[in-house]
Image (cartoon, rainbow, N blue to C red):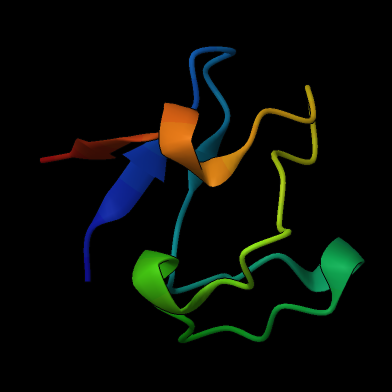
Length: 52
């Protein structure tokens, strides 16, 4: 599963999920809810880019 990075440099790592927003570990980026936003800057998913 790929990590995705926000323009603010926050990196969503599926191995960790986003526990503060009730996203369990193992959740791929594509499976995040449509209304999920960056926990640091509130950017929407569309602004994230995959990281190699």
